Length: 272
Image (cartoon, rainbow, N blue to C red; front, top):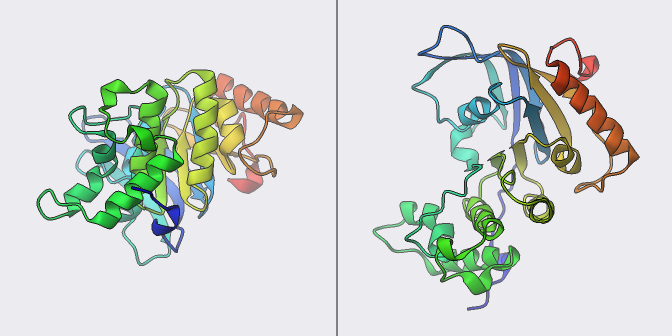
């Protein structure tokens, strides 16, 4: 079956997220994980968040996704534009692990969210066309009937990316989705994600400063204990970027922030 990407509709409105004085504490802890968190996540652009292991990056992402509602105390202002939408209904989440169902084919894994919304096990013909179109875009149309265990790690992450896109949400949260891949595969998937997620509001958690520099319109460093964020002015060139002298200078700033891990050591005051 041939598939045309024109059949895949993109959400018409992007979403901007603004967090002011955010505070997050797990109910089983006396110490907050995040405090005085101030961030602006612009609509239709990539925002990358870096920080040491355990600083609360994944907690922040899971909070945005609505996955911690019964586990945490939260205070602060979370503003969504446009205001007439529930954020958790507008989000697709891509984790570090591909989380593919081993008993389902590649095609059925991409269609997983559609199956939850369908009656019984039925999936509409046009949804299959959309899924095949996405598999074609990620270079896996010929593998639609294979099982996940027959694929390489990079191929599995491409399936996970297609499944994320199949949800057709304006906000995409990504928690280090390329970190376990070799350098060449990671580079290619960065390029692919940048193309396929164009015009979506993307929040990417990463440990890799070069990945953030290649993809980000905005970079935040999460630091301190409890963690807060510092904003770094990023480059004005289009993404995905090649790594040049400007990128090297920005990487040095990022590494200095991560090394010191104190709120007064980095960040651009006029952009926080």
